[in-house]
Length: 179
Image (cartoon, rainbow, N blue to C red):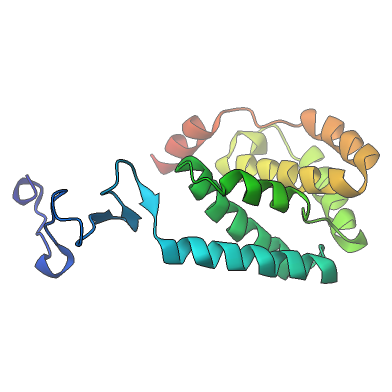
């Protein structure tokens, strides 16, 4: 099948194991597969737990720094992976993350207001482009964060944002721009 598609198997990346050989765990894309369902490596779980502790420490210093936002988002994705794999600690980790949600400082609040204003001024033609769709959803994400600091302003801006929705859905815009 690979040869038909003009692809070659890389032997150095290939390992054949079986379920009957428990000392050689079957691993695919970084997940263990031997014990009935996919699981994350113990070492990765330990790293996630340590990162959660570090994130909690960072939140005590500043929940509004760009570094904190990036670290929090990366860790949140890793916890989502544990949740998807039904790890027993995932719900506990998620609740701890909810306690330390990132927020915005005044300059980021001002930037969000500017972004909403610029989207509101956009033409109908621009609203039919994929780049506009992406920016629209980035601004919606920013409004979710803003809602933690100033809920009233976030609702007001969300109402304004609703008046300038993209004119098409993501798939249509994405494939239309490619072709």
